Length: 113
Length: 112
Image 1 (cartoon, each protein chain N blue to C red):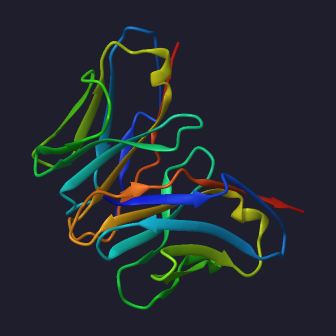
Image 2: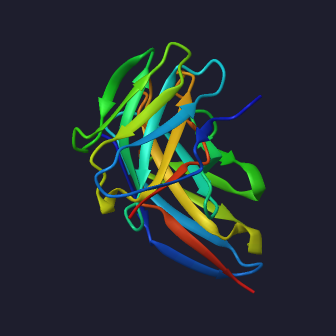
């Protein structure tokens, strides 16, 4: 079975600082991995996805994530935080060939001016 | 291309009533997923429909049910509403190729 652990339910950074949101996964087979963002009172929007191609994945809004098999991690980063990045971020995993996405509990990102 | 649409946006019901939530997937998507997002509880998987059939169900009581229509749109029904059913209900669709879901904006259900 697949599972995802997001380390830190709340992360706070200053505007212009590095954003690092941590995600570790558990999967018995090669996984597909995803990051979604949710702005207040909205649905989830796909930021980026890893589907067994390049291990460094670039997404929208300047975010990127690196798949590290040895560490079973898929951390999300952005070099310089903007106020508009304040939102909740969800990491998700699915088994290749399967349909069901399994989500982490989410990390709320706050940006300080 | 139209995204996943959900209706209504907001729904207020009293305890014991029934609620019906609707979802239209992206054109060409045959799978529809329902999630409950209650305050502080993250995303809880409810139901998965594909090609008109229920494929998987999360750990929810039977009063949560749904269906998928021939045009792949879907309904989620919640009977005998309880206060703790108050949540944002999210619908997502996929094309079955396994590259992730596209989410709608959700229905905010409030039970009073």
